[in-house]
Image (tube, rainbow, N blue to C red):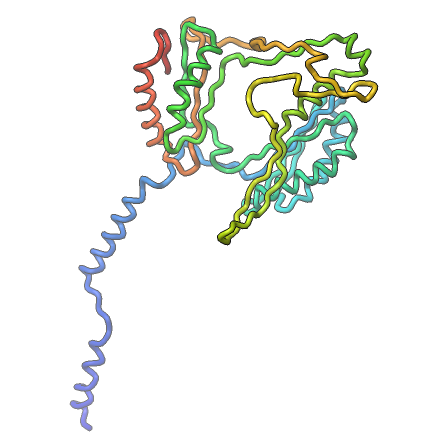
Length: 336
């Protein structure tokens, strides 16, 4: 076989490979770029980055104790026990006169609900070993994103009326409208002096029955206590499982306070209703400060965005809704 025949046989093999033209590559890159442009509005845009790691804090009160005693008798013990929770990245504590707090930072890969369940179990086991002056510690969770970031937009609402009435109007007519906007995680209202339930008692009557003020405080606290009980998996009839959150909540979740529903043990071991020991009235809390603009009382309305929300676009939607609400505000009420 001569060289000419060999060349003729190799030529077809040379052209068998896939050859993509430059025009096809350009079109493909343009298509990918267009897809990327359409996804840009879905990216979260925030004014400030979220830097808070997931974690929780455990708080308690120890009435009548100095900060040194609180640290030695309660805070240090809780801190040592909570360090056993799986996924703990950092732990710190603060003790004051009559109170203490332990802050626990978790690794970002830790299951927050399971960590809370472990912490609840540890607190339940440790509490009997703490001094009797220590009330039952409470757990407050914190995490990355919507639970740790501050408001992205705030308004000041003022009117020639009392702050509590301004806040009630905003709570009934403005807050529901803003809460319906997609991307709004929470709407906060503050600035008004809150209402409180005031309990008046006869010290001589309490002394004769062997009841202390701390007994009344503890009975009310236990009656309205909310406690995280853990998580559990539930299997459906059609197959498959899902996790559910278990919590102990008060039987009556409304805002009414009925002392007859709360029982207290007296000296001889009998149980009597709280209504037989105290007189209950609902009054406005004594104001600690006043805030006015041009002589008008004011309150604050702030909005917290969801973690994945575009805050710049969301602020435009909020302002548009506030413009609609402005047309129906009572005379003299305005917002900034």
